Image (cartoon, rainbow, N blue to C red; front, side, top):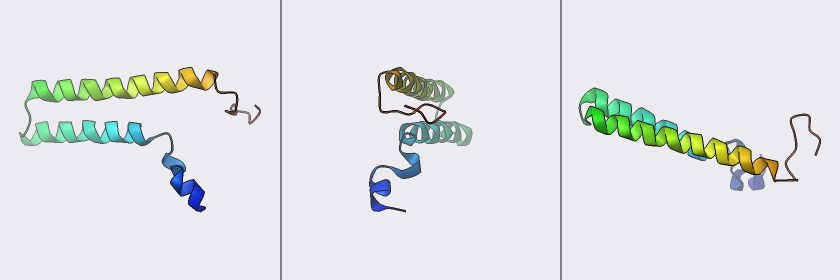
Length: 77
């Protein structure tokens, strides 16, 4: 593995926000399950983190249309 690949994010390049949101959702559910968080706070936390995931996917799909350097699924530009 090249150093440039690691410094550019490697295989997690576009998935850091998604993984952070998933970990936050799991943490909120776990905190509610063990009694450290109220149900209403857990629901609002999970809802806001789901919004982060939704908007990240929407922004990524919107800007990929305008990026001429991005390859398509078939590998052509």
